[in-house]
Image 1 (cartoon, rainbow, N blue to C red):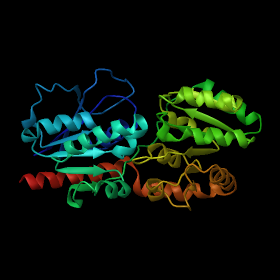
Image 2 (image 1 turned 120 degrees about the vertical axis):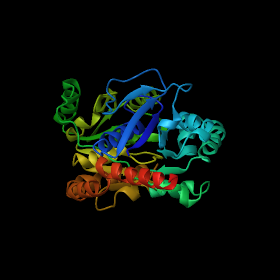
Image 3 (image 1 turned 180 degrees about the vertical axis):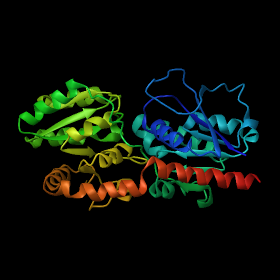
Image 4 (image 1 turned 90 degrees about the vertical axis):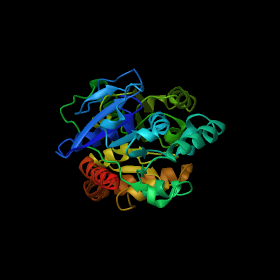
Length: 354
C-alpha cells in the first residue's frame, strides 16, 4: 500500500524553501510507494513554481486528515496549522530551513524575533520529527528539542534548466562591466540585511578592478542602491532585480559571492558550485560545514580586509577549487539524495505507526 503524504507550504513562489520542497517532491514521485499532494496557503501563485504532483489551495475546514499517513510542513503558518490539528494528524514532520531567531531578527527586529520565535518553537513541540537542513542547525535546535526528534537532511538541487533563455539585457550589462576590464562578482537572493550584500558594495568602493552584479529583490534593495550611489560606484554595480531561473546567469560571473550573516543552508551557494563557478563566502558555521577551504574561499564576516584578501585569493586559486566543490555537490547536495533521505524518514514514520 502506498504511503500518502501531504506537503504543506506557505505559498507557491520561487523562494528558497519552496524550491527545496519542489526539488524534493519532483524527485520523489518516481517512487511507486508514495503518493504526494502539495497544499499552499497564500492566494497569490507564481506560475514558475512547477510541482509534478497535484497542487491545491489549503482549505483548513475541509482538509481530510485521515487520507494522509504523513503531514510534512514548511514554515510557521503550516506549522501552526499542524499544531492546531495535531490530534487528527497521524505523523507530523516539519522542515526548518532557517535559524529562527536570527532570521526573524534580521527580517524584522529583536523584539519581534523573541516573541514569534518562541511561538514558532512552541508550535514544533508537538511535531514527531523536525528536519534540520544542516548539522549546524541541529546543534542550534538541541537547546529546545531532544536529539531523537531532530533529523539532518541536506537540501538538494536539481540540474539546471538549460532550455531557459537568459535576458539579453542582463548579459549585456555584465559584458559591459567586463569590457571595462573588471572582474565580475555575482550574487543573488532575497535582498534583506541578513544576506550581507552591503559588505560587497563597500568592497567595490575600494577595489577599483571589481564589478558587482546583484540578481534579486527585497526590502534592502533601495538601501543598497543608495549606498552604491553614496560611494560613487553605481557605474560598477548592476542591480538586475528578480529574475526567473537566476542560476542561468552564474556562468557569466568570474566569482559567485555569498556574504551572508546567517543562513539555514545556502542554496544559491550550491547552485554556483553546480555551475562550476568559483565561490567566495562568509565564514559562518553552516558554510564551513557545506564546503571546505579546498573547495571554497572564505572571509571573516564583517571584516573588509579579510574580504578583500579572499577575493585576491580567489582570483589566484578559485578555478582550481571548482572540480573538488562539484564533486562535493554530487556526493551530498543533489535533489535525488535529498529525496532518498526524506523517503527513508517517511518509511520510518510508517513503521512507527504500525
